Length: 355
Ligand SMILES: [Zn+2]
Image (tube, rainbow, N blue to C red; front, side, top):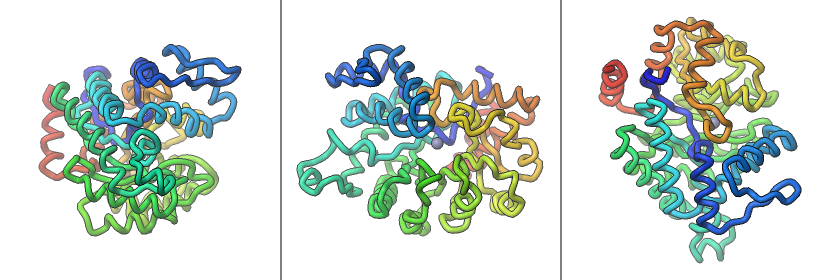
């Protein structure tokens, strides 16, 4: 598995900050982060203890809010963002990833250090022009990493489901404005059980006439997986969907994604971690592949959830008794549905075949 060249199309920058880096950035910033009985986060072990604490006490909600907030709290300066992005490329390199699409919510990284006086005066309203420095800092880190480690990366901007309609529009505008910085798509992430994606329809519509691609977390958790997936396909016109856990249950959606070649970004270890699935077979990967669905395997939040992309692929392969040909098919799917040009896809195929 360690020698197998891979792609990762669904990886959150904030979900893959190394604990050692996190500690270093917390120390440098002089922040004191307390939790539980006012314990202070000082070491890497403290990070894992903290995550364990929020998971036990608040469940998946706790990880999605308090877990990410810990990471977000240090990702507030251009230097820190660039550092985290650079390290992300090193993480990818160490996992034998040759190409990745890294996603993040730029709005989350512009609440403190990045705020200009103008924005402070206006409250927390985020304008595209204020998000652009965030995206550029991350893009710089990724490009520096590409130079040193040879891993190609692109950027997807996520709209948090808790964002306002206006914030969503500003993120879409920022995506359009930073295509030269390797932004290739937009995404919607967050708690789909309580927030629909409807407020972001106009943000998605803004990209219909651009070169940008569209994905969205849909069918990850909650009782409305079907309607969220359907909305992502039909209304948001997504090129890919994140998770789509119950997809195999719905023949109409399976036909739609197969005929439109919509990529499915599965992340089984993430689903196990959050407790949404009990075993990887629930995802019905083999059956979906047979029905012509472009399934791909991805990591989601490896460092924060405590596993690697290798773990994801290895454990899934084991549970389904997959052979090398199936793993190669899954990888080929990743190339096919990556947000790249036909020329880049050809190059990627050559790159993974070249041992
Ligand atoms: Zn995700």
